[in-house]
Length: 153
Figure 1: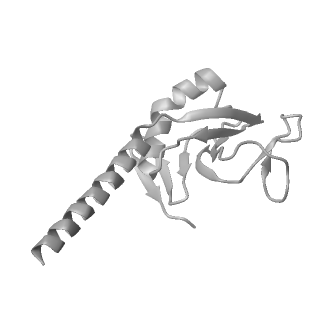
Figure 2 (figure 1 turned 90 degrees about the vertical axis):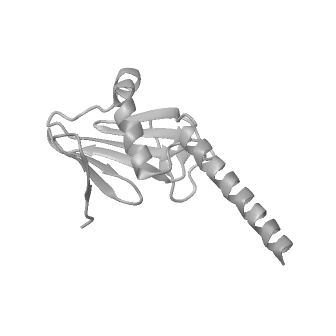
């Protein structure tokens, strides 16, 4: 009986170690920006290897917002200050429109759509409030730089 328990504990430890290693690998791999599509003050950023957790997504945005502005010109606020940036999973790449894909009219070719799989949205209303929207929740950047969870309506 003791040998069986020992084997089970070793197998369980191996599974936990592999799972933790996989999670670390997911969190350390760099985000790949595949393309940026712009419509007025709306930006769609197609990505691979985006952070998994809400905290990871927000932290990535805060660390990379200046680089996104310098490299891609986003955000591009409207005259009244609002902007919207949505990060989409690039997934299987561009494909032909079939049913419910997100299509980009700035690509003048047959394959200009992706599956609708939003990962993260950054919005600013007027000149002030920054809102982070994930599948899991909504968060606001306070004036003192603190991230505060916002209840969904």
